[in-house]
Image (cartoon, rainbow, N blue to C red):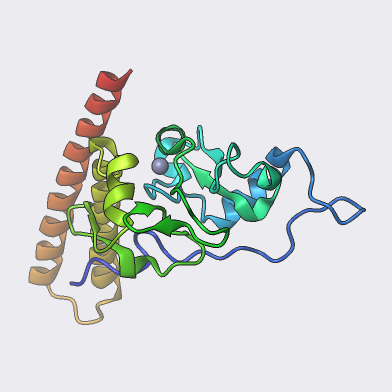
Amino acid sequence: MKIMDDELFFPNINRREDYLVKTTGEYYSDYSRYRTQISEDCGERCVYCDVLLEEIGYEGMVLDHFRPQKLFPDLKSNPENLVLSCPKCNSLKSDHWPEDCGVDDTFVGNVGFVDPFIDSKNDFFIVDENGVFIPKQPPSPYMEKLLSVNRVSRKLVRKKRILSEVIRRHYDDIIEDNDLSQQKLDAGIMAVGDFIEKAKRNQEKLKLIRTLME
Ligand SMILES: [Zn+2]
């Protein structure tokens, strides 16, 4: 069974063409008005560590200025510069931005960020079967280090997502099999039970980590 596909982590995301504008055609200066639209465009996930809104209890995602406000004040209210981020990635990213960067560039040499809406992310990094973010080329090693993309909590969240996917596919395989036998059913039940046990253990680890982080 092939578990990993291009959609399980960091899927392609697209910006809408029609962000909210005032009757004058200008963007709203209160950029929090774009929260729902940006959240939808980002697939309700942190564009940096890929945690899903539902994986952090629908709490605490923030709007991040991809090009930092401090360096690009003109883009402060431009929704084209907003991305969804978890608070930790947002604070680690802070005002970091490559020096001598052209206005359309997002990385220079080893430093900077893959644009989640433009760059083909699979060219830059992958997530392995253990939920580990593996950089393939710059600036991904810089991103991994700066944003601590492989922090323990995120690796566990990704691994939990893999387990959920494995369980779902086993379930689908069993339900869709028209040639069932007692043996196949028993094997399916064993496999699903085994995966559920693993998922539970993972969940306990997550709880423990959350307690330690409080
Ligand atoms: Zn994040």
